[in-house]
Length: 503
Image 1 (spheres, rainbow, N blue to C red):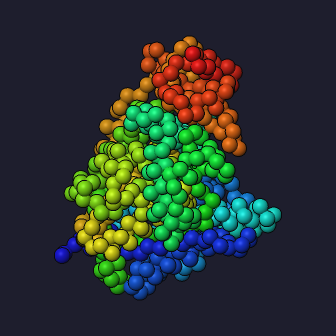
Image 2 (image 1 turned 180 degrees about the horizontal axis):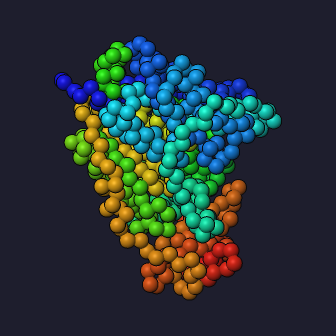
Image 3 (image 1 turned 180 degrees about the vertical axis):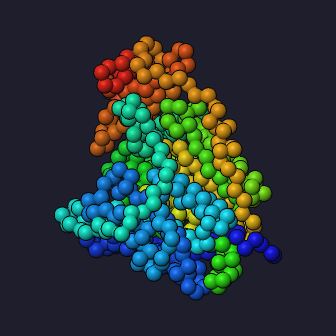
């Protein structure tokens, strides 16, 4: 089959995990990424690939996403990787915050390769938080700092995920926010709280079974639904209904790398045909950015529209997919995505190839690079089959989609603004920052501290339909495992947060 020589193709994939190194013996982030990048180059086959790389892009680490770097920072991680693998790229790019980044960057660079701006692109990312935490606990001082002659180019887009008003009320961390979606989903599905907890336990137990068989999983342990949902021992509540086993695990030592190039470059460098996987469909969307602006808390217009666009571009339907990796930081992300894509949550094909962020591991913004590597490996092993990667960033905020297959196909890219307009035009309820009077609970969670209820965070509606944020401080534990959404509250502002009491 004749194909445009500028057609982008994924030719190299690699993953790594460290479960065993002693404190102080784990690799620095730049060493982790260099090792996995060499493996991706070797996986591609061919000759002279390292010297042909003209762009190295690194997915942003947690250390540069507001979590701190106790062992020193690096001003140009792409350069640090390139210098270790013998590459001399003309461009060194550091990506943005967001778990959608790996697939979004693939979509972006696939377009640039088509246009002739790049020929061979290395994408890599990692998290060394397991090693970092263990070294800190042991009182060790490691030196991971590194300076390059020039700082890395920074991805220009920066998203502000929350306002000061939202942050003040507790809408600041994913562990507080995804439970809001989860409790809304339970009501949407018509389940009582206990029934919904059992359902999410059963969903995520299937993920643990995949993780248990994945050689790159940080925690390859199969668990039962009851083990996952029971708030016992170490598996304490974090944000109801989520126990620790239902939260993404960021304390991992994991890395991944992808090698993209033009078909012309793949031919020139001698990459075998059986290594090549093509991007048949792609899309990038985002919700109303702020959580308080969302249309509701049980659906995702941006996932529905983005997935439909990517599948249509590939010329297939969800029924044609053989392999899927659905972003799984929390079970609500899986449930919403499956619903909007049009896949049953108990689909026998399975919704994950890794085992999911709580069990396989959640290496920060880079998780979906592992998802892409897994999909690509399955496509290679099953030529002509289709695989889907859904990547999510923020608070179910930013979404990226990739439909993959070994069948050669010319790449096309539609300007995301053309379909984003439909999402942006959807009306949002007005937000009242200082509400007073009677309202109803739209959704809620009980935020826990060391396993004990600290306060309830709720999103409510006043009689006129406007939305408000509030906290309940009086016996928040009484809201666990009882119907809460739809109940009346009285709310009033204070100098700090809005306080609600059950009516």
